[in-house]
Image (cartoon, rainbow, N blue to C red; front, side):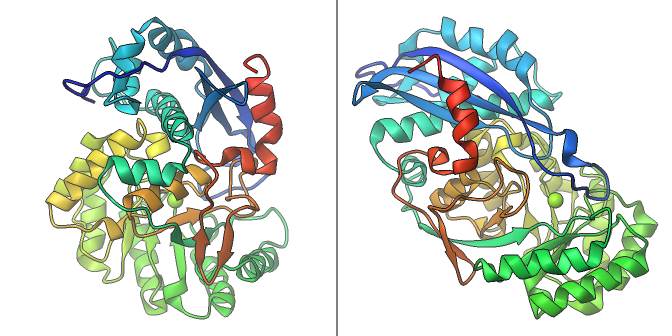
Length: 399
Ligand code: MG
């Protein structure tokens, strides 16, 4: 992560207070590897000295879904560095600089060893994007697009991710779940595989296809569970269905296994959600055998934020891939704005699970498989009713 070079400083925005809250995910669902009932997310607030209608402008962000909160890293390492920084060093071209904020958060950290630190820095960096957008009075997708020299496309292709294993009556509930997504305006879906014997997973896929209508509307996700023999067996089972993609068959860092599958399975493979740095994504590009039909799922909220993510996009475009192949993991508002701002292929959505963070809230209208973003400034987290209580709790001492 490189601190931006010579910057014209106009008027420094001061971050006068930082806070974080560890928020538990609601729901008792599981994929092939983990149960999410114990998972948590770090919600972060950066309180600025700027005011609108007498109230401080506050940037909100969080690390993505599927991991744990990083309270200790935030409180002990990252927040003290931000509060000790010269405010002017956190600005660039007259605006708050998420790049400089991420670089400050990483001061005195050695390279490599990406893990929870990558999520903690991401939560802060994304809160800086929210703050920057609110200070500009525009939705984050427009701030992001402007920063990267693009025009925001506020109509984003989305798919509903879910299809988890329920403790009882799993296939019937799976169909109910997908039917509900279809009635909510989604046309493409993703379900889990690898948590049941292969013949049961085949039955789940056939049941799901009755609702999806066609294999191109249905993806499956093994969550990195399979060894090579199992991944091959599933590839053979899946191929006749012509599915949208086969996600994370093996360990996220087993690029040889990924390359083996892309050499033998003709339909799209998707991976990348558990790569937490541009260096890891570069290794996927070098050694993973990715093709033009495959899908990249790196998630800014798990990998140091939007700046690092943009570096990944640059790298894959340099090597002949398209940003249309990028569908970030994490079906929530932050990634919806990033997809809209960077012009990516589409966004995952968790309309029914991983509350209070999953899904886009009632302000984002979904129809014909597309989500329409609103003009609410920032990422629009304040417009999601499930987040009202955690946000109030996080910011109660700041307003
Ligand atoms: Mg996945």
